[in-house]
Image 1 (cartoon, rainbow, N blue to C red):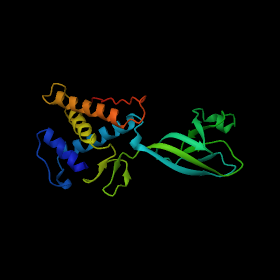
Image 2 (spheres, rainbow, N blue to C red):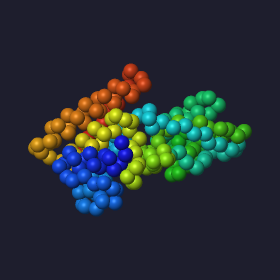
Image 3 (tube, rainbow, N blue to C red):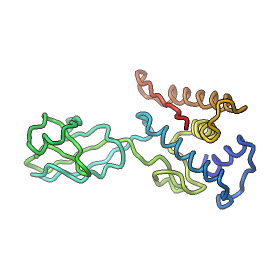
Image 4 (cartoon, rainbow, N blue to C red):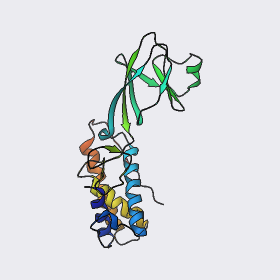
Length: 212
């Protein structure tokens, strides 16, 4: 389901008139719905370690170098050098003193800090992408902007999560006649997504809806 279809679903739930083209979305409530859809989408995608956002990339660490530009487009999950996993170490100052624990890395500004090696290394980085949408050409992007963009959240969860979540956020009133229905449908979709896309039985991802 693309961005325009999600917006129209929200309009139906809110008893507003649907639109036929993305260019017709000119009213204040239209813009609010557009914004809230992306906010809810981002909140869900960043709330847990969803496997549909996992990506892998390789970066080079030249010999005699202790830092490289952090070009990772998201949250690092694992970093491996020569097949050995390196753990994140928060105290970056120790890397400048060469007193950090073995097999660790840290982050300082836009740099990844690493041990110094005598030979070039290829680092494998597994991360959770911060791009939470796709264009019509399946190019990753930060958020939905065009009518044919799509959320990174898998079908069939994207519609109930984003539509009902957006309606709840837009109205923000538990006394609203439809609020209980939206909340129920949102929770059901969330429960189904948890049970169906978690690859490990011990995983228990959770998402919290924030009211404003």
